[in-house]
Image 1: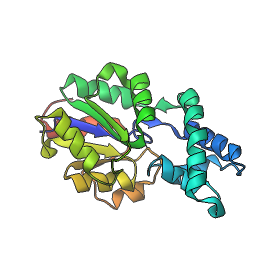
Image 2 (image 1 turned 135 degrees about the vertical axis):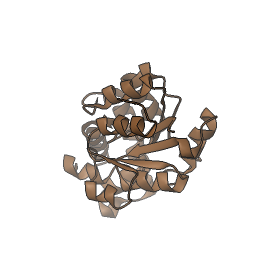
Image 3 (image 1 turned 120 degrees about the vertical axis):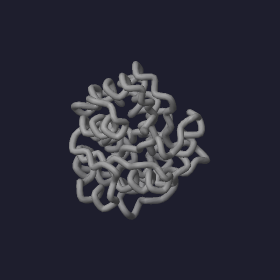
Amino acid sequence: MIKLAIFDLDGTLLDTIEDIAQACNHALEECGCPARQLEEFNGMVGHGIFNLFRKALPEDMRNEEMVRKMHSCFVPYYREHICDRTKPYEGILATLDILAENGISFAVASNKYQEGTEQLVEHFFGRYGFRCVLGQRNGKAIKPDPGIIEEIIDEIGGISADETVYCGDSDVDMQTGINAGVRTIGAAWGFRSRKELEAYSPWLLAEKPEDIYEAILRENKIKA
């Protein structure tokens, strides 16, 4: 029986890449660095905001002073433009509707910084009442450390790892689910390749969001 679906945010629930790229390029330009091409960001995101900056900066400028400067330029700009081009992937809202109708609880476990994670979830998914929304926070290990999944399960209470699935679009997400002892769902529509997800033998490799509710309802022996 599956009672809880935990989702990654960027590349899983939301297509955020253009707004992330725009904000990161703004920060790069403010720091006197060349902008990156949009397609480069698919491989840069997913490891937390500071690692994004380290990857985006020119190799000879990847020091902690520049990372901090990038952060100070990125966050205020992104806060103002976080929803300019970001949107839920096609089929996500319908999938959440069906899961909610069948009593499945929702949570988010993201490597996006906490403020941005909360802002996006509230804007796009506020009506669903996500039980827990966690992003990158000071003093907390980022994915693939399983702590974020364990913290969500503990905070919600009454649900075990065996009753939980974790859905994400990257190798980091698959590793996180494995480390936490929950079933994993690979989101093949996200920022990374299908091959990257397949390498971790997920419980489900979802080609489209609708595959998620079909698999969960089937597991719970509920007719769609």
